Each structure stands twice: as C-alpha cells, then as structure tokens.
Amino acid sequence: MEFFSGWNWAYIGAAVALIIDNAIRIVALFVVPRNRRPTSGMAWLLAIFLLPVPGLIVFLIIGSNRLPADREEKQEAINRLVSGLAEREDQGLVSDIDAMSPALESAVRLGRTLGAQPMLRGNLASMTIDYELSFRQIADAIDQAEDYVHVQFYILVHDDTTDVVFAAMRRAIGRGVKVRVMLDHVSAVRNPGRRRTAKSLEEMGAEWTYMLPVRPWRGEYQRPDLRNHRKLVVVDGKVGFTGSQNLVDSSYNKRGNIRRGLHWRDIMVRVQGPIVLGLEAVFQADWYLETDSYLEQLDLDTVHTEFPGELDCQIVPSGPGYASENNLQVFVSLLYAARHRISITSPYFVPDGSIMNALRAATARGVEVELFVSEIGDQALVYHAQRSYYEELLTAGVR
Image 1 (cartoon, rainbow, N blue to C red):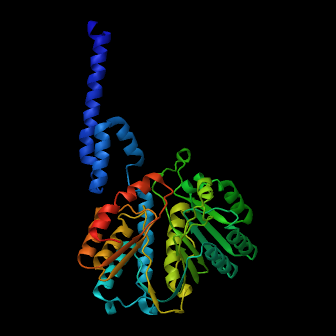
Image 2 (image 1 turned 180 degrees about the horizontal axis):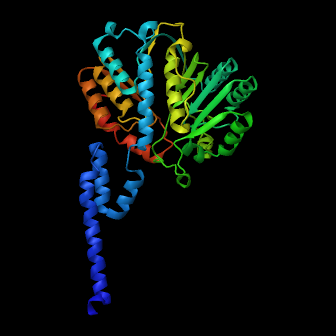
Image 3 (image 1 turned 45 degrees about the vertical axis):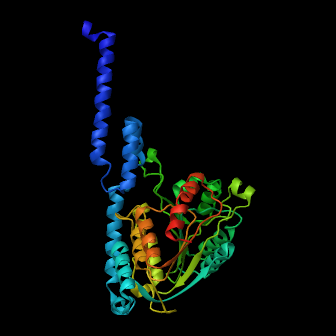
C-alpha cells in the first residue's frame, strides 16, 4: 500500500499533468497551423506552448475562423442559386467583361468566382457623406415602398437620430408592406438601446431576427468576434442602400464619445438598376442562414428590366460564412493592378502581410498611395496596433 501513499499520488499527478501538457503542445503543432495565416498560427502556437491548458481552452472557444458546417453548406446553396440566375444573360443585364481592360477584367472575374455575382450594367448610384441625410434618404425610399422593405445592419438601434427610419418602417407596415429586419446579436447586446429597439420592431409588426446569435443555452453558438458587418437596405428590388454607416446615432450612444465630442463619419451609396438584385441576393442569403426560410425567389424577370444609368457595378459579399477571405483577395488584387493612385480610408487599419506587400509594391512602381485614418481612436488596442504600422508605411512612401 506504500505505492499509494501521498508522495506517490503526487508523482502520478505530476506525470499525468506533464503528459497532458506535452500532448497538447504536440497536437497543436499539427492542428493549429491548418488553413490559417502564418502570423495567426504562430500567435496561437506561442499562447498554447506558454500556457497549454488555458491556451487550448481559449483556442477551442475562439480559435476557429469558420462557422458551423451547416451554415457553410447553406451559403454554398445560395451561391449556386445566384450563380445560376446570373447565367441568364439573355436580358442583357451582365456587363461585357471582354471589352474591359485586362486589370479590370481580372478583378471582375475574381469577384464573380468568390461571391458568385457578375458585374451588372445600366446602374445609377449616388454617394452621401451627410450622416443624418442618409437616414432621411432611406426613410424617403421606404415611404415609396409598395411590396417589401429589407433592412440589414451590423448595428441597428432605435434612437432619436434613427427614429426617422423606424417611423418610415412603421408607416410602410401600416400600408401592408412587408418589412424584414436583421441585426447583429453581439452588437445589440452591447448597445444600451437594445430593449427599445426590440420593442419598436415588435410593436410595429416587423419580421426580424438576430444575425449570428451567441446563445449557448439555446444551442446557438458562433465565435463572438466573427460577426456579420453588412449594412444594406432594399426597397421593392428597385432602390438599394449600402455603405459603411450603421443605423445608429453618430456618437453610437456611448457616453465616452458624447463627452469627448466624437462622432463617426461614414459613407452610404444609393443605387438603382439591376445591381439592386445583388443586394437583394445578399439579404436573402443571410435571411435563409438565420431563419431557414426562403423569401421570394430571386427572379431577373421581376427585379429589373430598366437601366436607369450607365454604371457597371458588382457586389462581392464577404464574411465568416465564406470559405475564403473574399474582401482581402479582391483588395490585394486591386492593389497590385493599380497604376496611378490608391486611396484607402479606414478607422481600423491593421494590415496583414499581403496588404503591406501590395502597398510596398505599389509605391515601388510609382503609384501614389494615400491613407486616411482616424485621428482619435475609440478602441485603444486597435488604435495603438494601427499606429505601430505608421513608420513602416511612411518609409515605404505611403502618405
């Protein structure tokens, strides 16, 4: 019985802990780097090697950059549907890419391969930089709705600034128009206006749902940092809005922002023409992913037969539901194709190696590169991470 004395149990426990510790490290060497950027893989390996058990737990919670397999399967089904509709070029909706420059043709083909949507011709677009004016324009479009209104925002809050849009949605429902709304679950939880927003949507009779809900007790869990950041509105398949602006006051209703006088400056684009079909396809895909229900089947015959403008436009959706980083691939492709000038505007510019290499290559071949970033950051860690690249960017010739 001496073998089972206190000291021997201590030795056994230490040996088991050592075996588990090393087993985690060995398995991590083979599992962590798969389908991951080298810098990200190295960071995770370092964390796991320094603190195997805590590092493994954190990795299992937020380490995967993919959503559940069933969501990816649904996304692929939607892509096939959209791609099949796009093949119907008999109506003359699809732009003639053979007439484009080689660089533009390459980018358009890449966008279609990644997001399934072609470039469509005959569109009209206007840009708005006035924060509150864009809400009034959205409300005006909703007031003209006869069939449906689809609203999708990463952050969607009913406050004094956005009341003009909520009032328009309420009036639309009163006319018998179907109003469907999607908003991100994590952003809603973080916002103090969550209860008012939910109450308003319920009382007006809108169909609405959260995107990527994080509710483990209901069997709903996705990484809280993998979010759907879309911002779009579609009215009757005729008018669409998209851009960087969320449906919330420009202060984001944060006391710190209000106290310091900080306000977000964003851009929204109003579009008309066949490209609205692309925005509608994005909304319907996400609605299907969240609710398991199809809406009105996308049909080129009913969406548009008019060409109100002369712009060629293409929608390239991206996000965690896609197998590859669509936006990153398109950005890198465009940066390498640039010949004269590149202008980048971002509040959170923390480039990875591929973006940095593309920018260095651009300045080396004589392309003028300018970068616009926020003077004051609202997220300390991201702000300081962004500033760490300034010296390298300036040395490379970026203004």
